[in-house]
Structure formats: structure tokens, C-alpha cells
Length: 123
Image (tube, rainbow, N blue to C red):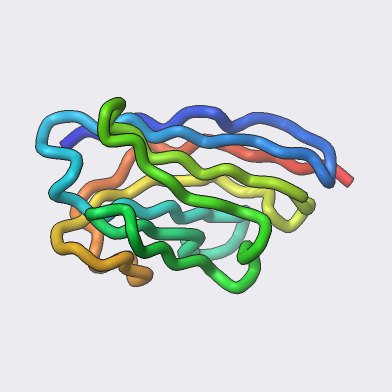
């Protein structure tokens, strides 16, 4: 499995970005997909996950109501729409793929990781 994240950049507080993660190498619909982030000096933290079938999502409390995870089976891509961005959202964002069906939150449940994409939110 290969994961290629893109869409990061610099934005002012209150702005929006959409991250994309292109999946290849296996059957996309067989994997749970997740997004994590790592801020400077902090550990990697869960952001959002979506089940294999797309019907269940999970979000970190800090992003609920602002971020939306989705997946496009025709494009083998998972998205993270980020609205109302805050400076504390600044981090490197990583996409991940894992076996199973449910929208998992623990990083140990993910088997493949993409390279990160940097999101910088200025105040």
C-alpha cells in the first residue's frame, strides 16, 4: 500500500483547507482510513477516521464540527476538509490505512502511513 498526502499549506485563522490522500497498491475499499497530526514538540495525535464502508466516522474532540473526513472509492482517495482553522491546528498531517472495518482511533490499528503534509495556521 502506498499513501500520498497533499493539500497542506499556509492559511490564516478561520480559513479552510482540504487535504487529500491518494491510496494505491491494494483494494481501497478493504481498508479503514485515518488522519493523524503531529505538532512541533508533541506526539502524533488522532484527528479523524472513516470506516471501510464509509458509513462511520470518528473525530477527535478538538476538531468535531470543524473537520470532515470522507472517501471517494472511484478515485481511491480519502479527504479531510478542514474549516474554521485555528493556530493550534498547525501540524504535519498524516494519512493512514488499516485492516478491518470500523473507524479506528488508535495508531497501532493502522498498518500503512503516508508522508506528512504541513498545515500552518497563522493568527
